[in-house]
Length: 302
Image (spheres, rainbow, N blue to C red):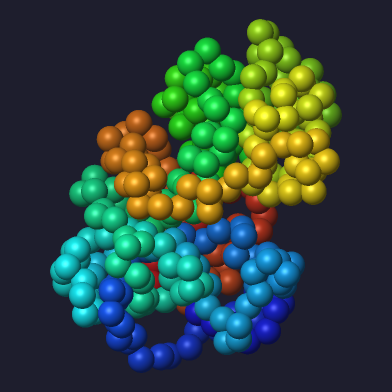
């Protein structure tokens, strides 16, 4: 998948290119699944140009899972045929083949489906960073905004793995799923602070925001200490109140990804898949992501 200028979904096109060759310490992966993430929309539209400028023609995608197709000189950790998951920092996973540094891959547990493995890097590492940032632990009550979204749906479960109680803000159609994974759901909208206080009779200890600045201010209104508020999206609001902004890059490493993959493979965390699209329907996949109402992950199957 390529685009040669910033813009909407109409700038995306499929390019026929040669299968890449690995350089030293690189691996070529035949992609079986690749997640689609909201941050990629902002990059493609140019809204993050100051932080993450594109070099055209640009590709898309960081999450990936697949089978090792070729290995470069010096690679001893992987062999052709190995099943792996990982990430690329080259905006390149929305493709049939992708070159990845060997150190950015981990073994795919057999219990993980391709769709889940290919969707795990961004949401898994981001949720890990956010839960760690707020110090969630036994006895805590933690509120998560957009709790049925890609990151939120993992964060509410990881909070519980760490021994805390999770309250998830989401639209009513997603409440049954939240209850199924042990989360107390509350609906967003007018009166939200009151509903959270009713659900958290002993108070809110920490707050993870995965949606926007209003929730950072809500966390302060609820009496949460700024040091225990983390937002993955609202940097200006975080700076205003002194909250944290730990996201995927704060926990991007193979140890974290391996831990998250093992938690999912063991059944302690469920990764809901909202929709699957073939590569040629990537614009439709982004249309669904941009609605910001999906339950879990949207994934491409090249």
